[in-house]
Length: 171
Image (cartoon, rainbow, N blue to C red; front, side, top):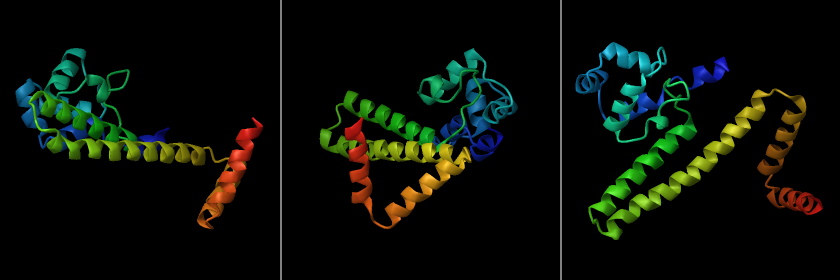
């Protein structure tokens, strides 16, 4: 698990600060938090107290569960989480546009972007599953993965698909 922590050293909270083009000290001033406190939360040195969590959630306009884990520590920024944050922010923007009566034609690009992000989330989930399988370091699994990758690289997709369909039919 230690290796995964190093890979995802950034946190969702840190990412929210960055995409909102804010600074720790600026947010701290507005929420009456010292920059050191805020930094400790972002770097996962301390959990975020419940009352501060609500202030941060209100500040960023998202539910606090988006950026903290079950122990109120800042959630690591995984590729899947990054896409999820983008989808959430896009949904909030579209909802605001709809509430403001913005024309559907002007909202359409945002909806298309969301569809692309949903596809990207699926890809990121697949990559995460593949990574988890590789982390098992099981020779049998590695051989199977190598076989499937070789077949795909050799453009034998139809043969693999037929094997898969045949296997599903036998179940």
